[in-house]
Image 1 (cartoon, helix red, strand yellow):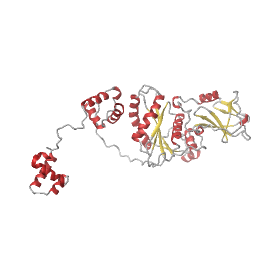
Image 2 (spheres, one colour):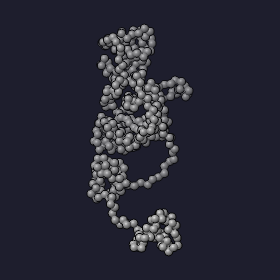
Image 3 (cartoon, one colour):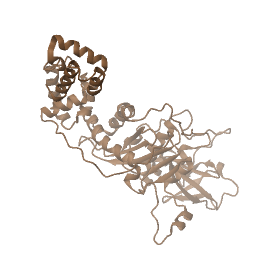
Image 4 (cartoon, one colour):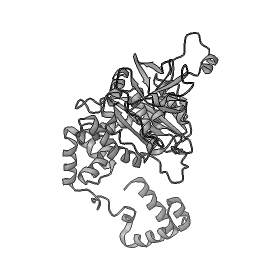
Length: 429
């Protein structure tokens, strides 16, 4: 009999002796008047033992059998599970082996088997978080995590990830290099699937921002308005850009990488993924849906602030490598050490000496645009392209009919150098 039970027995005996009323005893015991009356009636037949719970010393009816416990411990001792924590282990036992056991039960079994050590909680440094944005797509945090995701089974080291600030919905892709081309590819996927976010929140890496020049003031940098290729693409898509001055500033995506480097690595290990292509398939089919279901806030009641792709937006043009070139008197221009000729049918009055926009698309196509209209070009000395039939031109900006198919396998292909991309474009011509 513990002290609380002794106190209860003392109050009941005082009621029997008429020292206190039933209501006063109930208030001291923290129970109702009715329960005090029931205990007093039972004391007449059962004596002092009525304050002791009837199930004390007996096994719980909901106790899990020893065979299940032994099977769980055997699974947790397998090499693939060596670094699983109780929470993740409980989830995977239910998903893969139909063993529905709470994480605290698994924690107790792991501690008893020497597979887990409890840790004391320490009060960390005080930090006041910035409130979440209110709308879905209002602010999207963006970053790349470098990690050995396949634990030596394959060459997969870079995960470009986005996370919505309001809902924590996440997505992204594994890429071979953390470069402009790969980040543009992930942005293409996002915009094509969700629409244009309002603002993108990134670090100050060279992909997103131009390093300030020596002895240049903040006002001079603002007036110069220099942009990277990625920054130019954001501006043409009407997406704002916010630079973070510390990892803590975009802490939501930074903290999520800790979860990914723990859970995703184990998921890929259990799925026996060995290639970049299979890793991206696993992300889209299993990991991101499960991650968003478990960690993201529901979209019900949240305003969707994404903006759709309108016919006036050329996604392939915005997300490309763009440079300006001057048209010579013979209607040629130089680009990347090569000379190109504008097709005779696309020559316009006043074109000579004017600026020409050169676009190297992510698909490898080389396009030239003058005053908003594309012109056919060919490398000097190469066969000129066949003349187009008369009639209304058809847009080829990959925005017609939904998702583009040229991005199939995009992240499995290493990013070509500028020269190689131009040669590929010429070969297609």
